[in-house]
Length: 221
Image (cartoon, rainbow, N blue to C red; front, side):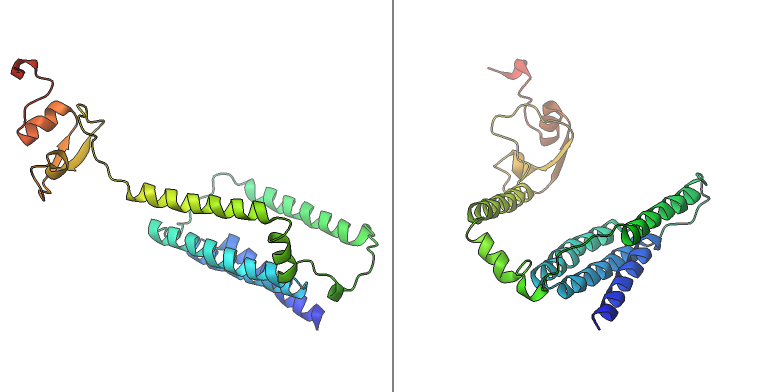
């Protein structure tokens, strides 16, 4: 039964991996990669590592792949159009390298005779949730807490950068580059005036808004 399940999940992982690299639609490739992650998680469960299997599903098949799918949908990547291949030697080179990889794997499987010491999987606590939790909150408590603080700082920094508004500082005389701002941003007297003001220099901004150019020395008393 165990061998049958291994063949089933391993075949699913290999099939989804082949589908991932052969699909021309990136969305289908991402979905195929999710299938690979699910098959690997099933293999981890068979190896008595439920925590690693859960992390595989939650982190990779969940968070990361959702992010990848959202990026693909936002970029609106369409199916690749078939074009004439310029470098025709790539196909035979890929076949040759695949043959070398298969030969190396066969050599390792059939000619390298490893004699591992027999061990009952039921007596090992490697990969179990209890053993990992005990290690995190005892031996590795300080690195774990430092990592959580760093992640919190990254989240706060990302929110700060996302909410930062482009407002000229008080007393600024030069507008760096072409900018589109509102009259209310430049002149506090125009509260609620969202009229766009496009300017490249201070003089141009003053002309558009009907203000005096601060660089014009002839108007200074």
